[in-house]
Image (cartoon, rainbow, N blue to C red; front, top):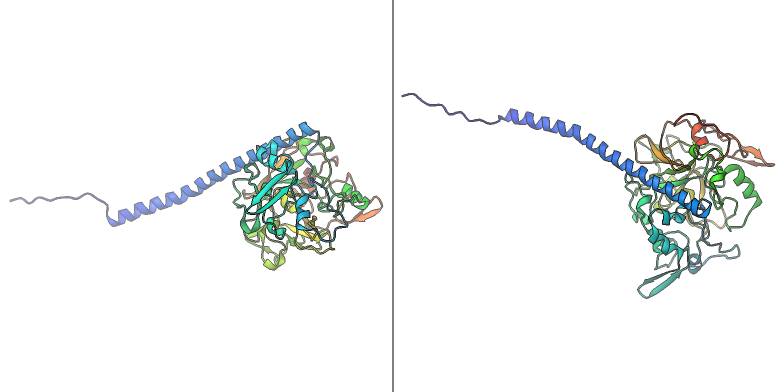
Amino acid sequence: MQSQRFSRSGFTLVELLVVIAIIGVMVGLLLPAVQAAREAARRMSCGNNFKQIGLGLHNYHAAYNQLPINGTGTGSMGASIAIASNATQRARSNERLSWLVGITPFIEAQATWEQIANPLRVVVGATTTIYPAMGPTPDPANAVSGNPTPYAPWWNEIPTLRCPSDAGITGVGGAMGITNYAACLGDSMQQMTYGAKNEFLVSSSGYAITTRAACRGVFVMRQRMNFRDVLDGLSNTIAAGEISSHLGTIQTRLKLSGATYLNPSACNTPANINSLEPRLWNLPGAQIGNSNESRGMRWACCGGVSTGFNTILPPNREVCGGPVTVATPAPTALTTNAKGRLVLADAVLPPSSRHVGGCHVLMADGAVKFITESIDSGNSNGPMVAVTATGATFPGCLPPGSKSPYGLWGSLGTRGNAETISGDF
């Protein structure tokens, strides 16, 4: 009798392990490609938001024959007020509103603008506060002691002002509405805080002289600007740039260095900078302020740390501040003193992003371009030479019309220095 053999088809253990290994390798190769595709989509969306902001700027200019003022709003609380009450701080915005506030109706944020442009009644429990048009100073509610009725518009999250690649979350550590887009303030840190007015919003001849020499960008603090002021050409001048926001760590926060006026790279030392992340400070004690005083944390505030940048250091370099510009009365925080006035340190504030290798900028003609970290930035590691302009000496700025010392990058940030830019960048 002949015996029959039965064969069973299937995988051996070795074959199964080989198949699993092959699948693991394929997934490992596929995931970076998927992540890269997602980042490419986010980057494109980020650029599209910037184009909307550019259209908003041009539509604003067409409507009002000027650019939105960076540092606008209702007037000063006055130099005679020793300590401003909470009610006083809520009664006016002290010309501390950013350039972004004016373009809200032009970037699909009409509802937010209607709240800002009209008196706003806020009721929380038994407490009622009526805010005037243009609102209070754009500070977090906890910066005004005893305020149970925060001003909602300053906390609004406006989608057009957010880059999808940035994961900053509103409300973390006191953060208010976040922006990833900032105004170009030129190639100097001098007078970027006040412009031609002092901390009491009183015009100062000394400040005005320094501002004329130092503030060479499309936007000048508390000054009306127009496209006709851009003598180098709209297509050759940066109007705004991308900034990455604070993520709940000490990243992108301001580090003070009194030497920054004379050396923009004063903070770039191994003791200060984390070698794995150039925008991360090694020493927590070396920073000032908290998260709401970090990059992009308050879209409505005109301070350079919040909504501005300068073309001194190239994209994605460290953020480093000079001395606080007002010593008395002593500031209670980086952004406000006891009177609620603007007390920001002048600083080296490069643009930044979560994109690889650079960031977006908005040219004054509305074009959006991607600037790499390797752009020619001149002698950014060397000292800024103190020069004499109109009979006075100013560290860190040049006479009006002088060529930028920061190469192509610096020349793109200045509006009227007769600099010729050939080719693409």
